Image (cartoon, rainbow, N blue to C red):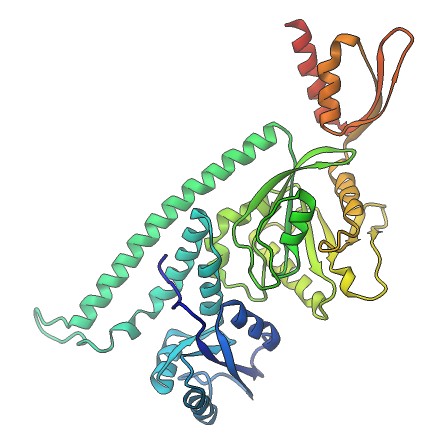
Length: 425
């Protein structure tokens, strides 16, 4: 991968400034969680306030001296800013502090670089890292000559910079071609599922809301789940049986975060398309977190940005076992459709209610009827049971089977048509 972190935790000084010029301030607590998730060891957290960022070094001269003093005192290897820094600000800060400096975007890219496991995920992270780095190349070659005037007097620094830029652009083209192939493969898989009329349910939500734990609980899978930010980067798909409905595909996706870097949204387009093309979204919310209302708004912003805001959605209020007095339940809209389901994925509470809500939303065009089967139609009977569509069964005096079934109308009609063809054959 393009950017690999040094082995072992790095000692880091954290910086957060409250700016009057910024309406949406970043959360210092979340920032510290991000730092710990990256494997760095925060040894000092410097906070302050300004009307607006300093154009040269983001922080003012006094704050800069305070940061430099903390770096020397703790022998810190890294300074992390809970803000977006311009390339020139990063260069000036590194020159003044004499250590590596990363902004919030660089930190998130760093975490993504550690967590990507699949070929697709690694490509997406590398693309985002390259897009972020291409504007920051100059600081790597300031020790070489700059371009001089005159014929054939181009400096080594300018030559090396242009070579690096060209190599990065070529690599980005290669990655985009590879990701386009991945996107086409995913699109082919989605078309196959649509032909088979298997609906897709996608888990979305703020990072560390418990999506992977819920995914494991609903699918009996064993994907990685941890109490840390961005534990999941790669989309995972599993088939599940939805009671009174039938088969569905459940998708676990990357978590969102406030002010998610646009580079990551672009790079993860292939993965996020699983969300855009889903039949139903389960918006997982950590209800035990005091900031969960803000997190809900941030997720809505990202869903709007990727074009998934029109997909039907159920809120899944997770971690009710961490809040005293909360019990599993379904909250409904005025028309009776499910709006929110209160669950605990870790404790296994309310999962039956969640599946009930999913069944209702997916099964709006569901047929419930009695079906008469002749003894030779055992194959159709087995397929109906395999889909979980049979509510009850009785045998008539004539030997025929009467099955009470409930399933999507399209599936019902397709199974009957396939059975008729099988009988004719």
